[in-house]
Each structure stands twice: as C-alpha cells, then as structure tokens.
Amino acid sequence: MKPTLFLALQITLTAVTFSCGANSPKFSSTPVHAEGPKTAQIRTGAEQTEKYLPLLKGKRIGMVVNPTSVIGKVSTVDSLLSRGVQIVKIFGPEHGFRGDASNGTHVDDAVDAKTGIKAVSLYGKHEKPTKEELADIDLMIFDVQDVGVRFYTYINTLQHVMEACAENNKELLILDRPNPNGFYVDGPVLDPKFKSGIGLKPIPVVHGLTVGEYAQMLNGEGWLDNKLRCKIKVIKVAGYTHDTPYELPVKPSPNLNTAQSILLYPTTCLFEGTYLNHGRGTQFPFTIVGAPALKGKYSFSFTPKSIKGMSESPLFMDQVCYGLDLRNYDTEQFRKDKKLKLSWLIELYNNSPNKADFFNSKLSKQMGVIERLIGVGTFREQIIAGKSEEEIRASWEPGLSKYKTMRKKYLLYP
Image (cartoon, rainbow, N blue to C red; front, side, top):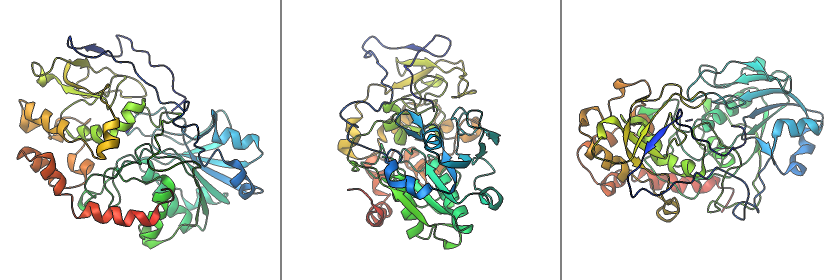
C-alpha cells in the first residue's frame, strides 16, 4: 500500500515492457490532478486556514503529515510556518514524511532537511507517539489524505495518534480531506480473528468515511484503547458530498500514482493475497495483473522490474507476466454499481493452471494473506468452491448492512 506532486509518467524499457494484443486499446495515463470542474468547488480542511489559524496562536504544534498534506501546491507544514505557526515536531505515517519509502519499508526518525524540524516515523514497531514525544506539544494536527479502504494504513495511524493524544490529554485537530472512494460502502466487515497491521477495526473493505468521520467513529464506538475518547476538532471539507467526484492533487503513496489506480485499488489490492503480480514493479500498479503461468490464456503481458521507491523486489521480477489490462476500465462503473468487482479474481483463479498455488502466501514474501486483506475466513474457500460473486456477497450480510446503519451516526457530509 503503498508523494511529491504528480509528474507526467515516463515509461522506459528498463522500467517495464508491455506486449498488448492487436485489439488492445491505446493507453493514455491520467495522473491525479486538482484542476478542472470536478474539484474546483472543493476546499479541503487545510485550505480553510481562516477557520483554524486562531486555534494555533501561541501553541506548540505537532503535525502528522506526508506529501499529501498541501495547501494549494505548498506543503501544509511550509505554509503554516510561513504564517508564523510554531511547529515543533513532524510525525510521518507509512512511506515517511517525504513519501519516498516503498510499502512496508522501515522509516527511521530524522531531522527534516528543509525545515530543520524533527520528523518522527509512525510506521513499523513505533506506531504510536510516546509521552516523551508529545511532552513539548500543545496541539496535534492530522492532515493526511486517505483513500477510503480498510487496508490502507493511514487510518491505523490516525487511531494510534488519537490514543496517544487521549492518554496524554492533548487535543487533535483534523484537517479533513475528501475520500475519492467515499461514494460507496462494500466488502465484508473485518472478523477480529484477522486483525492485523492492514486491518484493526470491524469495518468493511470500503468504509465510506473521510478521516474526520472515521475519527468520530473511533470515539463513538469506544474503539480506542481502554475505550478512551480523544478530544478532536474537525475542519470539514467545504463543497463536498460523498458522491462528489474527486481527483487527488498529490499521489497518496508511491504505488497509487493515477486516478485510475485509486479507484481500482479497493478491488485490485485483493490480488496482493494471490500468486499474481498486480502491477508492482511497473508504472501501473493496481491497474494490471498477471503471472507467468497464465501464458497462453491472455495476450496482454508485462515484465515487472525493480523500481526504487515503488517496489524494489516485485513478485515475478524480470519474468514476463500474462493477464488483465485494466488501465482503460471505465471506473464510472464503480460509481454506478457501488460494489467491489470480484469477477476479475474469480476469472483469474479459474484460468490458473496451478490452483493450489493461487492463495499460497508461503510462495513469496511479496504476497499477503488473503484473509487479512478481505477480512474474513470464508473467502478463499468460496473462490475454490466456485461460488458466484452474488453468493459470496450474500455471505457478507448481515454485518455489512449493520455497519452501513451504524456509519450514518458519524457522517459529516451528505
């Protein structure tokens, strides 16, 4: 799971090679952007400085931020410093404050070269700010762009920060941002047996909440350690509803590098629990998927390579993979159906010549465990047994409907 402003994607033969069938459509990569009529009416919480600068006056500020933390095209940290805000410490989630670490990579504490402010990593073994790290802070700010999926780890960072603030009597100011996948809720609710670093709380795969709304849920459901409540204030996004299309101005992590990948991610990240490469080691993660064993089944092919800062050791590195090209898939279909698309995984399982290997996470350190990703223990068996997408979806009830009802209590936006 896996920032810097978007640059035009440049593909070199040393990065990835593709071989498409004669009828394959020409692909034009669309980087995530903030321009255009779709997003012009939206003002993020961070951009509404008039609403929160008075709250920061005379206080020592700690900030949980990464490269998605921007006001216009300027880092929120740099922008607030220029306004005289006293920022004493920076905390960075997975991928680090500057966002140049690959998924799962350990990030060390450091001093930010640009500002001279100490930057503390909140990923790996050190997930939660300590009492000592919060001692010289009067107010914490959380300003990180999420993508609305349970296994995207920034909401876990939010939880740990809320717990630390609650334990140390610190207030948390959340500068809310739109959820690009906020227009639907889907997937099984996490079974506590499969709690992990990519899933902590009983929410579905696509949770349908902004960070500010999820913070309210953590408080309201008593999900923080020892049922503590964190004192929070949310600066809401102006001009946003859950149905408002939103393309991010900055990629939220190294491997979510296009608007297409962000909308496909809730579905295609499930391939991380299969013996398939889902685009890691290419410039198109989460939008292509395949394996060498599928040669002869599909005409589309790609060759994963080591790419620093994205995927240094991808599954099937330097091997030709055959499979699905989803780069031109019409993602408006998700908005119409409001569902994960399980048919791709079912199809690739059915076409796999080595079905016993399909979910075998022991085959590669690059694979995840499908139960931790999907959140329940029945999914693997359902795919193997040939259950239909409708039958699998039916097994998610009544948990999914109960969650949808509970979610309504915490919504800040229509």
